[in-house]
Length: 470
Image (cartoon, rainbow, N blue to C red; front, side, top):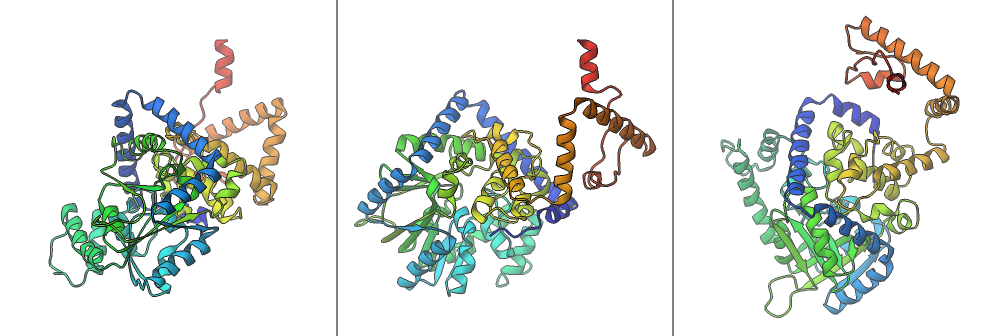
């Protein structure tokens, strides 16, 4: 459940120099990685076109594909459950654990389990979950939520991680040197190995559900998913119903664009394929359960924002969004952040005064749509949410008043030009008064200039220059 004052959290984030530095480093790393992957893949745009068509077709056929997936997965020995909402999913997962006497769980990174707040629910029922993804493990120790869908601890520095480990791992030598990343990874590996060996149940998400064979596909770069899914005798996978695709050919295309868009890799280090429980002498769980999570997705599929269900959770829109890279994921208040979160969260939690702020956290620059591997028209979907919020009367009186003025001006060209000319002259005067830059503005401009200076308007507007050249 999203809990926010988005505007308050964003304002706080903009004044956090440590967070600003961490986000800048992450932005450069992910954006450059995607650009390099695209450059060395001549057919990258063709792959995007194919992935786009696959995901659109999968969403259109979703009910039939899910029934086919259930039949194939059941035939392979898995038990498939249907969860209408988060409460259903939590109850099903907890019930399975209790039926098997499980009290210790290991988990791989899963946004679906973050969405349903599974960890807190398990703890309240005497089941201790341990996150095995390094980033998730770090934020679990800190009592935080993910700030990015593929890099949960991207907002932290290694010094902060070292402080966290010293506070949590009190049984280790307090004089140990964990100032470098390799030492931190080694320490986490030692602690997580204990969890792997002691676990009664492994809980994962699923990146893809293959209807053709009833298979779940998971991707990672740490290998923790393989152990999470295979070391315990009991395995539970929780997946949004939109993850389904028709065939292995479809899954292969999605995998090719996923890693390139997420981390700049040609393929993730580990691609784990699970079809039912282990048989005979095979290594793996003896009992397999798959929970198919709806939680607002069917309603989304029936409306004008259905294309959002095509999302493959690569994080590319976050990595290129000027809003996300300025305020980070925690400002959004829920498991999903950035442009994709601004569309998904109102669908999952409902459109309220809180969640209606998220679609407004966009400059509509279009970079999110430009880099999305399945070409989701995110700016258009954000506009749809704004329209819905306006129709529901959620914007403040001041916002509605401002939009009314804008509408009046935009339908009267002479008034628009006069207002534009007056504003430009006024801003140039303010710039002169404040030493050549616009550093402070009153009223609606106060928030905008709180964290940035603005260059003065040009002496001649674009339209004036265009008319002169014409």
